[in-house]
Amino acid sequence: QVQLVQSGAEVKKPGSSVRVSCVASGGTFSGYAVNWVRQAPGHGPEWMGRILPVLGIANYAQKFQGRLSITADTSTGTVFMGLISLTYEDTAIYYCTRDRGSSSYLFAYWGQGTLVTVSS
Amino acid sequence: EVLLTQSPGTLSLSPGERAALSCRAGQSLTNTFLAWYQQKPGQAPRLLVYGGSSRATGIPDRFSGSGSGTDFTLIISRLEAEDFAVYYCQQYDSSPPTFGGGTKVEIK
Image 1: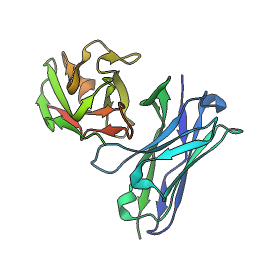
Image 2: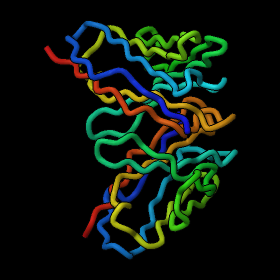
Image 3: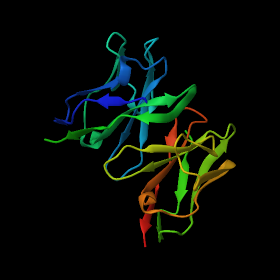
Image 4: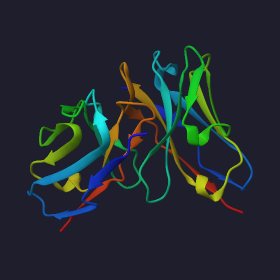
């Protein structure tokens, strides 16, 4: 059973940055891509970007270009999501997800979510 | 990007009734890469159906998906207490993947 475990809730001030981690059970993502999806209060999920940890190649939704960085540490089986220049609109639950098999962007496994609150 | 429109926004039904949820895509999903997720309060979404009609592992057969092109449907044949939740469709036919706005299935 694949389990993804994320870091804890964060409270940040506008203009600051946040970094959320995601670790796979067994210490590896087994060669599959890891995506980050966020969900603002009362809204549907929104895909942010993804990384293929074994290659370290990431791609981002256009909306987040220049503000989002997704990296992977294969030695610890951890993927990181970093978002800079936070605004109130970045308040959301951030989820890491793993693809189902070879199906890109099909989110079969989800972390428990990390609430990021942007507040002055 | 592909816009997904879900209807209705809210469905008020009683346990045992049949639920029909609609998802319409702004352009044809040529590979029928359309998924449905269930989300309960305080939980992450859970994959129910992928490829338009294939149930994910462990999903009861009262959930069925159908459709192709731009029009897709999720049917819950007989609602059980644990089925009252918000349902999202998501396309993974093209990048970026996109989600619909959701349908809330509530107890009448």
